[in-house]
Each structure stands twice: as C-alpha cells, then as structure tokens.
Image 1 (cartoon, rainbow over the protein chains, first blue to last red):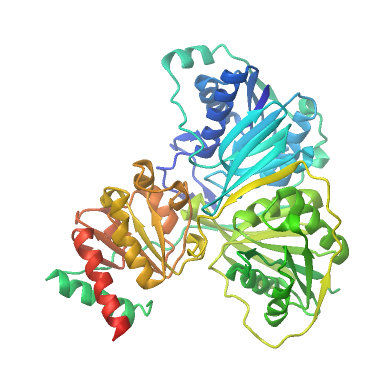
Image 2 (image 1 turned 180 degrees about the vertical axis):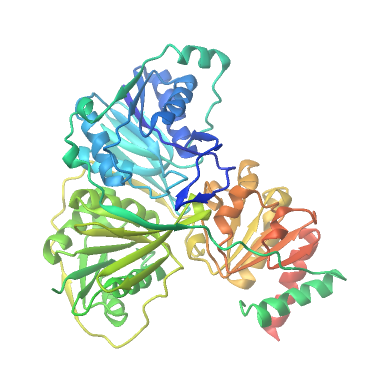
Length: 255
Length: 324
C-alpha cells in the first residue's frame, strides 16, 4: 500500500496574530503540523502497520516546513518530500497543481490530508487534488477501513454521519475524531534523522513555471476589533438572571 | 457585457436551507447591471421547491432531479453541477460554506481551472471590483481578497450575508437532463443525527458547554435552555476531549467557527483557541464559577456562578416570560 500524506506547517493554535506592514509577523512563532494533518499522518501509519507498504509525507512550503515533515517522520512516516520553490504562489489552485504534478510520477493507493488548515482555513487543496488526479475522494472523515481495492469511509456532514465506499486509489481528508495522533517517541525522533527528506523544486516535479499563477490576491489584512469586557452582574442569583434576560431583551435586543 | 452568476441552493431534509437564500443574496451583491442570476438545485423529488428560489430573486432555476442525488455523493453532485455549468456558463459561482459546499466548490473550481475564495463573510462591489472578506486563523485576523482572472468560485459562511427576501415569482425553471453517471463512489448509509436540530453554523443562539458541565449528563440543562430559546448546542474542545459530547459540536480554532446573535458560554474558561471560534458572536454571555476566567474579558454580560444553578433559573424565567 503506497500512502501519500499531505502536510502543511501552521502556527501553533496558542499563537496570537500580530501584523506589521500589512503582513503577519512570523518572528518568534511556534510552528506545528496542521492539527488536522496529524490525524492523516496517524491514520496512514496505522494502515501501513496493518497492511504493509510505505508512508510518504509531502508538503509545499518554505524551508521551515521541513521541521513539520521531520515530526511526521518521527511519528512513523517513512519518507518526506518538501516542494519548495519561490515560483509557487500562495494560491490553492497553483499548490494543488504542483502536488498533482509531483504525484503524476509516483505510485499511490491512498492519499490522506487534513480537512482544512487552521491558518488559511480555505479547505481546497486536497479536494482540488483529487479532481486534478481524477480519483474519488471523501472529505471530513471520522473513520476509514481499507479492504482490498475498496475503502469505506465515514464522513461528518455537520453532525450527520454518511458512509461512503470508494474504489482505490482515492483521497480522504481527516476530521477530528478519526483517531488519536501519537506523540513522536524519542526513538522515533532519532530514527527520523536518518529517514530520507527530499527537497524538490518545479523542475524536479516537472511542471512549467508558467502554470504556477495565482487566481486570487489578498488586498488587505486586518485584526478584528478587540472585544471589551462587558458587565458582570451581581446580587441574588434569581435577580441576576432576571437582569440578564432584561439586558438581552432591552439593551442587546437579541431575544 | 452581461454575465451569469450562479447560486447553489442547498436542500436538506426536503427543505431549502437558509444558506440557499444567502447564496442568492451573495449572487445579487456580486452581480452587475444586466447580469443573470441563476439558482441550481440538486436533489431527488425536490423540484417543487424551485418556485421559492424564483420568489427569492433567481432569474432562472436549474433543477437536476435524480435518485442518486438523494444524499450527497461527491462525484454525482459534481457531474450534475457540470451539466448546469455547461448549459449556463456562469462566471461566478456561489456555494454555502457547508458540508456540501466545502466539498463541491473546490471540485468545481478545480474542474473549471478557477480560483476560489472560501468562507466569505462580506461582499463589497465597487465598480468592476468585487472584494470578498474572510476570516483567517479562525477569526484571529481577517483578509480581503479578489479574483485575478477567469471564472470565480466563492463559498459563503452561513449566517453572515442577509438572505434574499421573498418577492413575487419571476423567471423560469429548467429541468436538466441527467442520465445516471457511472460512479466510483457509493453512498452506503446516512445516519441523520441532526434532523430537527438547528445546525451550529446557522444557529442564531448557541448554548455552549465546557469542562464545567462535568459529564454528558451535564449538558441536559443546556439542552433545555436551547429548547426554550430555539438555539443549538455547542461545546469547547475540553468538553469534547473529556468525552462529554461529540466532536461535531466543537467550537474553536479546531472545530467550527460560529457567529450567532447570542453565544452562551457555560463553564467555558475561554482559551485562545476557543475564543477564535466564537468571538465574532454579536452578544456573548459568560456563566462561570471562576471570576478570573478569561471568557469574562470578552463577554458582554457575565454571571459568576454555578451553571447548574444559573441555567435552570434562566430556563425557568424564560419559560415564564414566554407563557405570560
């Protein structure tokens, strides 16, 4: 079983966002594997351990993203590929085309990724990739079973549970609840240092720079207005509740 | 030159979702003079709902009615949508940022070679330029984006764009021929857990519980309050991780980002990851035993107290008001 896992490096969820000259400040930020991608890595390792094969983690990003790939290798992935090229714009269409170009020359049975990345939150690249490769996909999965040439996946559809069967090769995106991602063991971290991490550019993956164009552009970025602390009520609890209802009704006009 | 703007009209449990009217409104916001607004409705046995889309401002409704579209099948839905795209040649396509839209829109974008702007909360049109605002980092920041070229695909976050209002019925309904495509994807089973419940992303009122609810049973009083207010239940990661509730209810940087009219945070301390998911709510009410809890720093109204005392009182008084 050849398993590809799409990984993005993102800010840690604890980080606050600061802006400078219309850009997000990255200095001093702790980076992690996108939390949804961790579920994908874990699932890939479990499937490989059960069925045999190889897990290759793939990322498109700057050099710092190698750290996220190392973490995935330490969790148990076998090989990593970092596609890093300044000619790839930060654009979901271009990034999915770059990954598709790389995979066109690779064997794969399963492709796993996160449901979306917690930074940009667009949730496009994996689904676009399935289309570009012309393979079936199921997004936002909470369960995955592989049986021969078929896979059975449960999809979280806003709380409803849909069970879909697809023919392999196929792509899946992970939703919370799929599994409990492991922490890299000390031994895993040591082993990861010796595992292959390939650096590739557009020439290596065989796509023309002219195909790498952005379809959208960012015009402005801003921080939301800070919320002010409001009124903390006091007094007898019954009276507080009465006051709250009255405030919601008359001041906030919300009920 | 006039062009066609498409609004994907989502059907759930035999009814048009509120977000269907919001995509129609979005289409109107993005449309220029003389542009044609079309709605697309995919489903099985739902064709009779088309009139409501005409009444809400669609110039034309394309209906694809087929048993395979009864529930969401990624391949079958894309194939049906592509039939409509081939017939209508839209320049901008709007979807809800919902379980279906999040899956269908990027498929459509990739197959059109189009750009996509996801999870849009506001649309402004100035002359030829259409500017889309969207949250990033789950709402810790916002960006404004526009398209550089080609067809445009947009998903809009439910509950943020004023829905198209009901007017008189104008325009026509086109039934699209859809021979059953051969599919590599089969929907085996759908378990409807949310039937009759209000979806979190569309809820006007959310009652969310954190570790302070202490158990699955502890959500009971929250559910009673939700019933009285017509709200939906949400949760913090703490409550989900502790196994008190399903991950589908989680609100935060991982989980759902919500923007209701009122957000009741009950026994939720207010970690930064949770705040990212709910701080754009219009009114925040915090109920927590710990007066130092960070949630009070963002709450419009706070009650320091035991949620198991406060919430039943709130439910009881609201019931009293309702029946008075």
